[in-house]
Image (cartoon, rainbow, N blue to C red; front, top):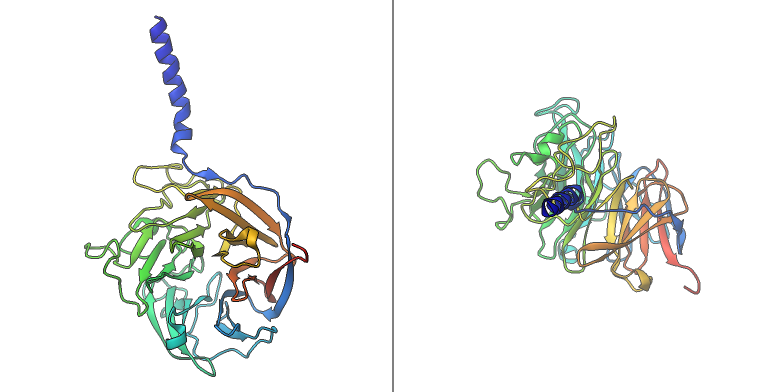
Length: 387
């Protein structure tokens, strides 16, 4: 009788522990924002909903504006007229001209890569109409991009104006990661390997497919897919070892930090730590066999956009940390990782208090923020005197 009671008690303890065992992801403690331990210096003003920023070798910056313009910004903040050679964009909702990246061989080939919302025959119609995320490249000349051509297109085109994803990250091997949203109205497609909605894809610099991609050769599967089950990845960066890290938007709760690996399923919309905006449950819960847990998640959300691993010497205490922009006004998130886990999170109050769309490290070892407003800015973070 005593033995039976002990067995029953042990079984009860194990049952109580099951939810905790299933919930492997570490939840953010939602630390209170603290004052930024750096000076925020305006570099440039007057950008219209800027989205992506890339540094040229000479210190000048290329900045995309969501309505469809590409501008050159001098170190002193002077803005060029809109550059030529930008493809037509479907500017509406969250769409337009989005991310920008330089070719790893830019010194030799002068190639600039753009992600954007590409219209079909009709932006308001699905199928051959609608719009999709696309990637184009052109050679930077005196007046803008020359010989611009689309090298890759998301399939299919849909009529939604939301969840384009759209970060561009080159790997050390010269292949390109493109992050792609589920387009909101088609979230179930994030689990469909015949389409590229809700995926991260990996392509060669010319848009062709790397032979070692995880799904190459499988019938009915898009060979460019690297990982799937993503909602809307708007922050992506490589760490010092060349591994990709992403931060994606959840719904109401459930923003995720992931380290996407080849062929893995990250669960959306079957598993998530968030709920629908109505409060309704999404999917089956927070875990399911065969689906990956996030490294870390936020509830409440941070609304991530833009990310960089800091590798400079100007902020020695931050070296190796991951900085993530936030669309919550005036917020910047810093994460310290160890052995693939988050061991520290700090949130900073940034002045000006605007949405941070992108975060980059400049060739001067300083951190630059791109704010997403009708009158957007480039803000440089500098060490405070004596720090």
